[in-house]
Image (cartoon, rainbow, N blue to C red; front, side, top):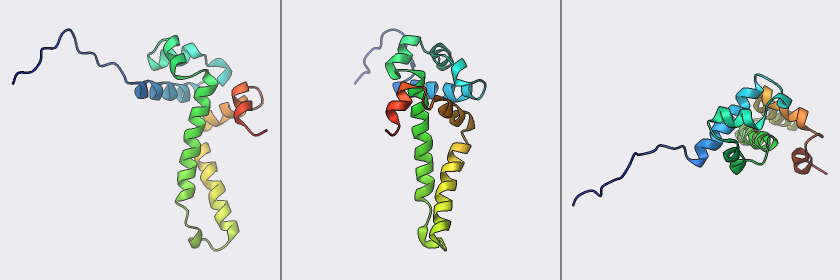
Length: 133
């Protein structure tokens, strides 16, 4: 059997997941260079190699990008907590110190993002609606 003929050029356009990853990576990189207020949606789109409308296909705002990154850090911290063996701890206090350290380490390894999240607190409708009431 013969292969069907293909027309035109093959394109290797990035998948949706790859575009999301590019936006997230760009955000974390830019936040390492300047404060959140100085990062625009245009900066994020340009850094990810996409257009502004394409950015809005994936995220509603730059704050939504930050909240997605925050979720990833929380998942990282949760995984670290899950690896803690409470039976190996000599006291409840030692266990809770390990839990707190897991979160501290996870957020500490993403310092620029943590600072940006702190600056969003109380000022962004996205943050306010996502936070406790």
